[in-house]
Each structure stands twice: as C-alpha cells, then as structure tokens.
Image 1: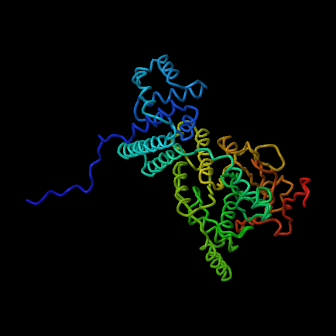
Image 2: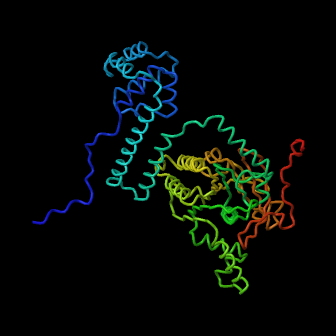
Image 3: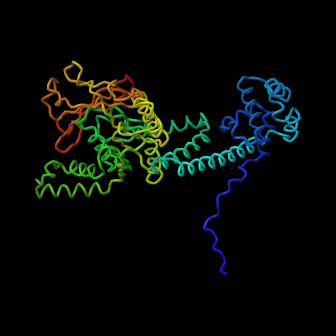
Length: 480
C-alpha cells in the first residue's frame, strides 16, 4: 500500500513551555539584593515589569523590590524578608531560605545587565506568542472585517516594540544632536528648519513643516483646504520648494477618489478649468498643457490611499508600511472627521474624535515626519454677528482635543464668500490664519487663490508683497 501523505505543515502545539530562563530571572533578583540601587534602576530603564518574570515567585519578589526602591527603603536580606512577612507573601516565594539561595547563587552583581537582557528577550517572545494567539482567536471568532482585524493585529504587535524600547537618550547625545541642527542652520542661513511648503509667506511663519508636528488646516466647506494641502504636497513631492529637494509624500483621501484627486492636480498644474474639461471645452493649447502637467506629475513620488471609512488604527499601520517601504517625509489626511475609531464609537463622537486626534499625533511622533490633517469647522463662524465670519480655534468640530493635540492650527477663509467682509471685492484673496503655533508666532498669511484652477500661490507673484523674511534686527539682535 502506498505510504500515507504527510501533512504540509505540522500542527500547532498547545502544550509547549513558554520561553523563559529561570536562571536569568534568579540572576536579576540576586543582583538586586546585592546592589539594589544600581540593578533596580537598570531594570526600570529596560522596562522590566513583574510580568517580565515567568516564575510566579519571581514576579512577587520583583514587585516588592521595586515598591521598596520607589519608597526609598533599604534593600537587603533582612528588610526584604521582613517586608514579605508583613505582607503575608514570604511563604508564597518559598521562605527566607529562598532569599538566601538567591544571594548565594549570585556571587556578584556585575553581570546584572546580561541577566536583565535575557529576561527582557524571553518576555518579548512570550508577548509575541500571546499577541499571535489573540490574532488567531480573532480570525476564528470575531465578526469584524478582515481588514479591521489586520489593522488591530498590526497595532498590537507595534505596541510590543513601544513597551519594550524607549530607554532615555543620554543628555549629552541630545545636546550634540541639537547642536548639529543649530550648526546646519547657522552655516546655511536658510531660516527653514523643517520641510518647506513652497509658499514663502507660510514658511516665514512656520519655518517649514517640522518633524513630528501635527498641522491642522481647518475651514468651512468650499474654502479650498483640500486644494491648499494638495498644492503643498505637489510642491514638496516635485521639489518646487526653497531647497529644491523632492520628498516622497503620502496622501490619505477619505473624501475624494484617487482618480478625482489626480485629475484635479493635473488641471491645477496645467491651469485648465476642470469644469470646462468635463464639458469637453478644451483647446489644442490646453491639451498640450495637460500633457506637460501629467508628464511632470508622473515623476512625483506621491502615494495616494483613497480607502473609504479608514480607522485610525488602519491608517497608522498603512502609514508605517509606507514609511518603511518608500521613506515618505510628509503625510496629508483629508479629512479628520471621516476617520473612525471603532473601540470608542460607543462613547460618543467627541470621545472618538479625541482618540483619533491622539492617534494621529502619536503617528507623527512615531514616524518623525510632519502630518497635515484637514478638518471641518462648525457653523459657528457663519452664525456669529460679525462682519467677516472670522473662524476661531473653538470652531473646530467634534472635540477640543484637536486643538490640544495639534502643534499648528491654521484656519482658512476666503473673504469673497462673505458680502459683509471688507475684502469682499477681492475674489482671489485667501487668508490662512495661523491661530496656534506651539513653537513660533501666530498671525494671518495672505495667499492668492485661482478658483477655476483650484490653485494657491504666493501673493507676491501677483503684485502683492510677501511677508518679509525673519531678520535678527527685528528682535533687537546685533548681526556681526
């Protein structure tokens, strides 16, 4: 009889012993009893927690040692034994004999870091196993969509690295890194410390888009916030900025399809009305301009994700992959109110928006790149009894946490939309009010907007001077 075919893969074993090293755990605890001040600080710095130890008695003893260290108590065989006895835990760990055995089996604390690293690595492996089992269980029992499970699984695994890393950067290293940045600014004297936007007036205020910053561009509908964000993305991706450097850009469009965005960008760059193009009113000259625009944009390192109903967890996972694969240096999200966070939906929209805002800010900090987030404003500007319906920070929709989390909040308005505004006659004037700037000045920036082409430009290109670049003399600083 023919031999029975072997299964393609071996079945998962549920009776395997989780990875751990009892010897390394005993080495850490013995070293802590010998030199508590140094060893416990090392443990805390490497983010060891009671669960990092697999043996229950080791977990109990480590928790007591950390608690005593935090309380400033002396740690030795006698004091630790007394503390365990007073808490009725001495028998749980094996009595005072166990403490003596720990010290006897650890002749020196010099190798504590080596033991700590072994314990940390084993805990990391157990955590990975636990998260993998949870993912498998979700696949079999959860009623959520597969994409949602994938996003949550990626987030869970990313959280592992956040929990197990993060030792403080030495102060000297921070100083040296900062001085490198300062020297670069001094030598180049360009005044732009972040990614240039391609708009001189905006760069004069923000000094570019700074790493890890969450930049909110908020407006009422039809003010051009998507156009402004895409104009910035286009300039950054093509290197049409002050330093002439092209940078990869990712766009998450939850409102418009990728095809709509690309069509708008081509028409904008070619200076051809998208409305006229849709009606077929296009000349041979315009056709040539469109071809040239498409050829230029073809070279831009832009990546557009137009997945509808994206959750904050999924967005963070996708952004992480784009950063790893393409090295993106700028993210645009259009727009915040269309994101969701299923875990907080039952707590109300305000709580959900707070979670979304926090997740986006955490993403910017994690990836160390600026993130431009578009946001809707409430109807409040139009209901206030004012001349120009000027928006305020409090008009951000759904949650005050957006204002709190953002590093920059820019409120966009077009005076020509309000007949009572003093600038109503200027159909091309657009005002970007930098209402919050965590690390710099606030104030209004005037831009030129051509509605037919959905294109923003500096006012200086149309006979209106741009803001003067920063000068040390303005601050009373002597220039050598």
